[in-house]
Amino acid sequence: MLLIFPSICARNCFFQIVRLSYHKKQFSNSNFVNFFKNKLYNCFFCPIIYKNKLISFNLLYKNLQEDTMAKNKLAKIAFFSATTITTIHVVNRIMNYLAVSKDVLTTKPGEFYDWKYGKVYYEQHGEGSPLLLLHSLEVGGNADEWSHIVSQLAKKHTVYTVDLPGCGRSEKSLTTYTNFVYIRFLADFINAVICEPTAMIANAESCPLAMMLHKYNPTFISDLTLVNPPSIKEASQSVTFIDKLKKWILDTPILGSLLYQLHYRENMISKRLAADGFYDARLIPSNFIASYYKGTHLGKSQGRFLASSIDAHYIHVPLAKLVQELPENTRVLLGTFHKNANCISKEYLLYYSNISTKLIPNTKKYPHFEAPAEFLRKLN
Image 1 (cartoon, rainbow, N blue to C red):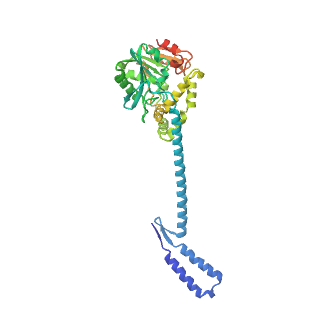
Image 2: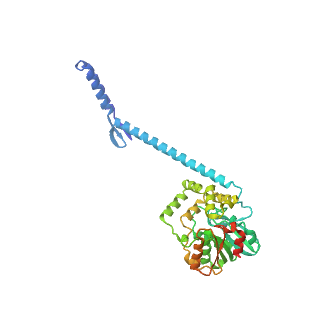
Image 3: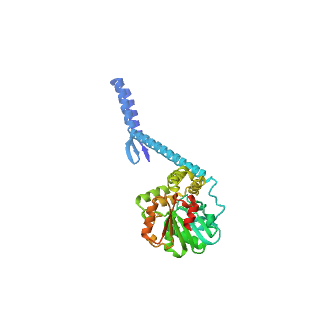
């Protein structure tokens, strides 16, 4: 509320000036001017109530001027923020559109299994005893990594290939993915779709999931093969405060989506596959990179929830006891150039000597894709 009382001061100033005009001869022109200025100055400094404080008129002017400048600054900040957010959102949309427009990773040959955390894509091939193939647990990971051996396996088995929840063509939920989420999915999928105990081949980060499923539901798995399983030490890392902070940032809608889009650019995916996935980077098929790239961006950047869960170690489990409880017919297949392959082989044999470990030459993370014939020979 603003109350101004200039009338009294103005009236006094007026009468003083009139009275002075009758006695002007007693003052010089300079004195008259000074007297007039002083009276106007007093009028200008008349008392004012502004924001529940008694201030002068000139202070009111200064306060109003400062308030206007502050409002202008806030308006500029708000405009800049809105422009930045809009730009980031548009960039995210464009990058996502370019990724999913690629003519790869189609859903024509498969079906969707309705699960509690969304629809899960899977394919079924051949006839015979059931065999479930689990791709590496990554956002872009998908069942196409088994494409070089499915036709051979389907001659003797009913082969099920699945895009795990949050991966590839499957629906990506806004949730925190943990190892127990995947154990629940595998149990439900085997009960609802396969309907009997199944042999299982798991690759890389999916190996601990198969091991945990055997621990909690040993009758579900009739035969188990682990391809490039993680080291026991690496898979036992716990969630820290920094991990939780990184996950929170990546889960945010605008900034998290931008960071996710930048991290999973096609050239970045190609570099990671060349460094860690394939022994000979020159032989990586362009379709493999395109499928991985498209798989990360299906679902409008919602794959960041799985990516943040993996980076924050929510998927990790202590493997030492799980290795000791593996079935006796378990096989461990390792690419010779996979990271720490020899150490992992010795590590698993140290905890459980009844498993068999075999090395597949000149391969890394995807021996079943790089050397399918040798992989099948070692498997049999």
